[in-house]
Length: 107
Image (cartoon, rainbow, N blue to C red; front, top):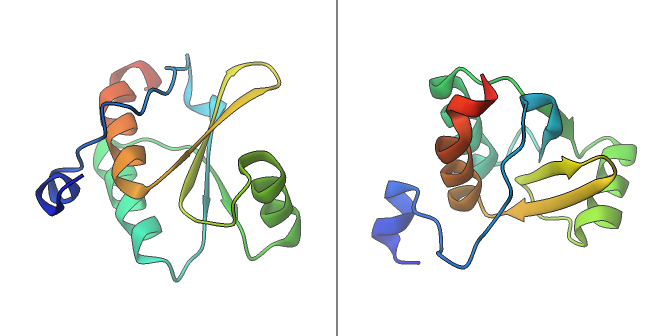
């Protein structure tokens, strides 16, 4: 991904995350001081989407992120396409592209 894609919130063609039926099937793992998390939050505000947020300064949320996604990196969007099945999407540009692509189906 080039720097120009980053500003356009482009997503790699290799990233394929399933659509979900409602916003309660999404959770954003984040930290308050993270500028990339703020960038994702800004897009959520622009799209008028409300999703579950998990602050990884809380040990239970950090542990869920590490156990499920395998990394401590934030932001991370947890997508639940089927009950008990999760896809963990890292990288703010990929998360933003996913949200923009699926926003209408989430409102």
